[in-house]
Length: 248
Ligand code: ADE
Image 1 (cartoon, rainbow, N blue to C red):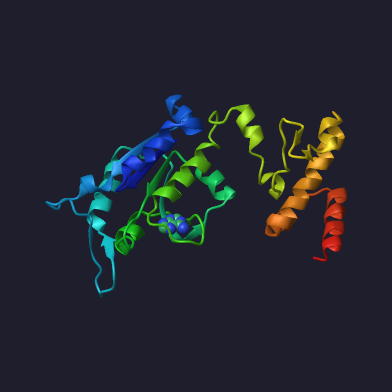
Image 2: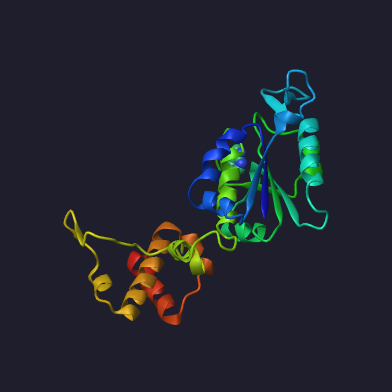
């Protein structure tokens, strides 16, 4: 898998691609990241990539030609049989969810187009973009942070990127439930004790305690997820009783 990031600010990606789990994945050749500076494809003598919008209105728009040239340079470097998606990060996109990260992880190349200013000329978007993705209902100054989020969420799904220990640690959304609360030493912190059951060594009881806490937490924080949660009959009854108690 190779991520190709089209941006006006390539330098802001350096820290995330050099450190921690992603940095290790890249140095082990598990995936690659290429940074493409859209400004390098400007044919303007001042290297300008933005211009006024037709029809008036505040703000500047990123012009189509440099973006199209940058895109062509990426495509020219990719095998014609490879599976490619071109993602434009925009608050107008479909919400980014775990299922989308899983789908993207099956492609050979993901081109991420980061917008700035008031957006990008519609004509180049309609020519090159396959997926419009938003990371949430709020507006950021550019697509760089959203692109980093997509890379992080997709790369960790690629074979070998997470060690077994790492994968076991990130269970949220498993069965559409949030993860249960966890504790490490000390056994007592400012008067709060680690729940007794976790010290019992009784695996079945621990497992069932954790599932119940997951259900409780999901009901409290993300009740929308419960509609598609995978629950046993006993767990479904636990949830129903919980809702009754809370009069939901
Ligand atoms: N660019 C600006 N805001 C964004 C958002 N919420 N998601 C994706 N791209 C964006």
